[in-house]
Length: 388
View 1 (cartoon, rainbow, N blue to C red):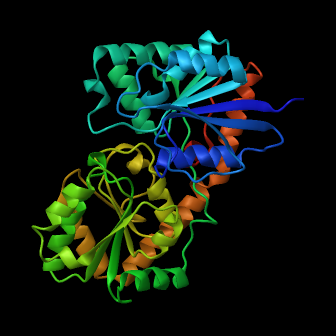
View 2 (view 1 turned 90 degrees about the horizontal axis):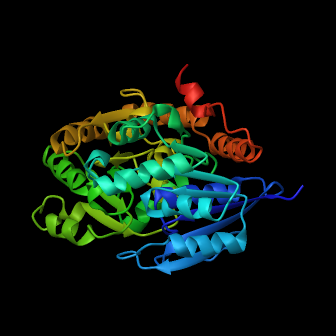
């Protein structure tokens, strides 16, 4: 039997959790069963060239991509994939294009949203979402909370959606004492200083300003902290300007910039902080947990489905820098608590969110849909474990 040809459609390929998730699928599915291609819409591709992944860029402008249905229709007619899988609003037109091109199976998944809630979207966008969701053979979200928000905002049946959680490579993301020391040497940080790190695009939705304000309070209260922000984006300049008003923190922060060496950076942290305004299922949060780090995260989106409070980490409310500061002070003062939380986080990811389970779920979904078995829910293994 010929291999199942899958075309993934995504805005761009780079350092974000969504993009890296697509790469995990593209490299993780059995190559003897699946032939995969990635179509990127924007011209902003940061991924180094790879021989094992075929990428077809449409090269539309990220600022003004325009309508892409015609280009996608032409591409699908030429490539004739068995399955088209689009992700998020950026590539949702691929659903319509795939239907017009008579692609056998169409899948769409939602992995998060912007700062504004989905209910505030313009009516025309909501109507187009509804249309595309009904045209697709399978629609899923990466967290139960995101599924519920979509269902509520669009007034659609929850039966339309499934949930498939993200997974993390627990071999790549693991604790490492030697690399911890190496990363600290790069930054000139002593072994006793507590490093609070965050990984992600420097964007408004990630709200790194709250982390800086919290760290400033913690340092003023006597905590020996150093903040490391891994990633880049439009908020870098505003964050640097904010630092100018924080003389206490100014010498205690490092902007690491964009990198594909996330695993190494995580091993250099003592605490992982995620102050996002919203998250679907955060890959970096899972990666930090797999790396044996205690985590502090906003009580939003899929975050609340990833770990148990006061067992693997701590929650705080959006923009609550005082609450985050209290958590940082508590964790900085107790190496034993950091070790306890970090070990529990690592064990939880190994049991519930390993990459192998995510790959197995995607593989089963693609094969099931192509076989024409489009009825009956696909219950993710991670979801099953969470119900125990």
